Amino acid sequence: MGGGIYDIVERPLPIGVTRGGRVIAFYPYGINEQLLGESLLVMMLYGLGGVGLILTYQSTKFAYRPRQAYMLLLIGICLVMLSYIFIELSLRQKIG
Image (tube, rainbow, N blue to C red; front, side, top):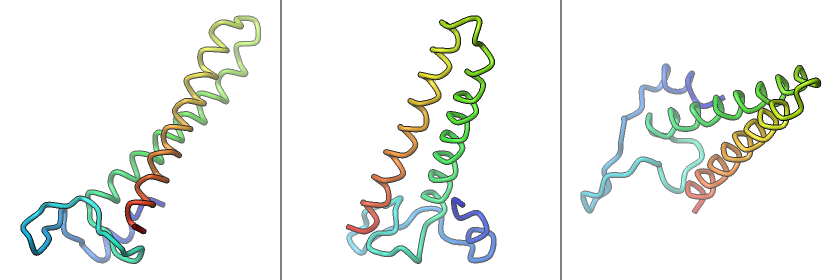
């Protein structure tokens, strides 16, 4: 989901360098190409969203401790929202 198979098959560069000598972490203006750093970032963000979903599910087990259930639910929702926002921002940066 984050490009792990693409990384194994294509062996992309870890970081890119533009003609002006600027170091980039995202391959601009191309959905079909990616650098190793951006695929690792997306995989970590997917993992963060997965942890958020697990915490949200675990909050249902604490019905008799509402404070703990509420905190787990709140933290889980925040993690899911943060991962979604950062993945959308990285996609918008790639598209341009």
